[in-house]
Each structure stands twice: as C-alpha cells, then as structure tokens.
Image (cartoon, rainbow, N blue to C red):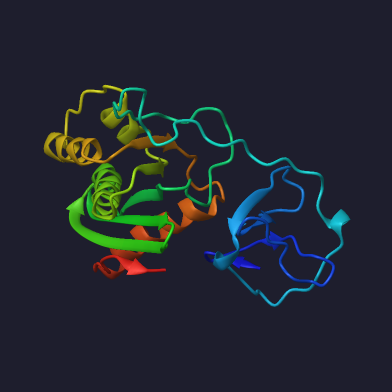
Length: 234
C-alpha cells in the first residue's frame, strides 16, 4: 500500500481486505526492521501489490506511545520536551493533537533558504513549502517550526513536532543562548507558548524516516523553485 508517498506493507484479512481495528491498520515500513505501526485506514491507498504470507515479515513490536501527552504538566503548564529514547517516531497524531515534521534547507549556507512542513491532524494532512530568500539553514529550520506552530494554533490543537535540528531544539527548549536569529527565536518561542500544549522532539535527519524526508523535500523544493506553495492539502 501507499502511505503519504511511502510504500508500506499493510496487514490484510483472509479475503485480502485491510484488517481494520478501530479505524487503524498494522503497517510495516520494512519487513525485518522489528517495528510495526498503526496507520489510519483512510490514509492507505493501493500500490498495485499482491498479498504476501505472514512469514514475509519478522515478528515486530509496536512502538510504545510517546510521552508528553498534550504537552501540559499537571496544573496546565505548557512544556516542551525532547525525545531521546530511540523509539521510532510516529506517523499519525495522538487524538486531539497535531503532528508535524519540520525542516529547513539552504543552498550555500548562507544562500537561498527554504522551509518545509508536513502537518497531520484528525481531519487531514497539510504541507507547506516556503521560500525565504537569502538566509541560513538554521533560519529555515526555525521558520518551519514557527509555521507549524502558527497552523496548529489556527486549528486550536496541541502540537507534537519533530525536527532534525539540534540547534532549534537547543534555542527553543534547552535554554541555549541564541547569538544570531534572536528575533526569530523569540517569535517562535512566543508562537509555541500560545499553543494549548506542545512538545518538541529530535529525529535523525536523512535516515529514511518518511515524514521527515517529506519535510526535507518540501524545503529543498522551495529553494530550487525560488517559490512558495502556501499551505496545501496533501
């Protein structure tokens, strides 16, 4: 099957139909990577493949739910967090939340820069490819996070966001002092603080993680085309 541009293996029943439980289907990105996921059935489409026997895939465990919940501590205080457990990142948002992957790109650093975001919520999936003019990779990363926060606020949803930018996580949630981009850092912090809840998580870049790869593609496309798409339905 196809899931948001990536080819996956999906569990089917004896009749060859998707085995749907609670609206979700077990999927694998690779048959032997030891991890199984659950994707919304509505997001799966045919890739023209056939039905394979169960033993085509090795035994796999579901990744445990990420910690952080809605991004609030008891008493309603918002918090940002960084994932460091090594668990596989999610492909679907938790109930009542938005899930985003954000990335930046730059040709020359400094040079033509862009931001890319893929944001998934209960009603659909949105993508953003934004050209920023002359800038740096760090500016692209921060703007991508800022746009994800702005869109989540417009939807009225808590945000769980994944980025491969250690710099962004450092200046936004670890107390690193920003020597450059101070206004942008402050604006992004303000946007995150306005959300009903948020958490920031690190994901390894260029590691074959489909949603992070898609965010990178959107950022690179903006740089290559020197153009912005605005938010579009994916």
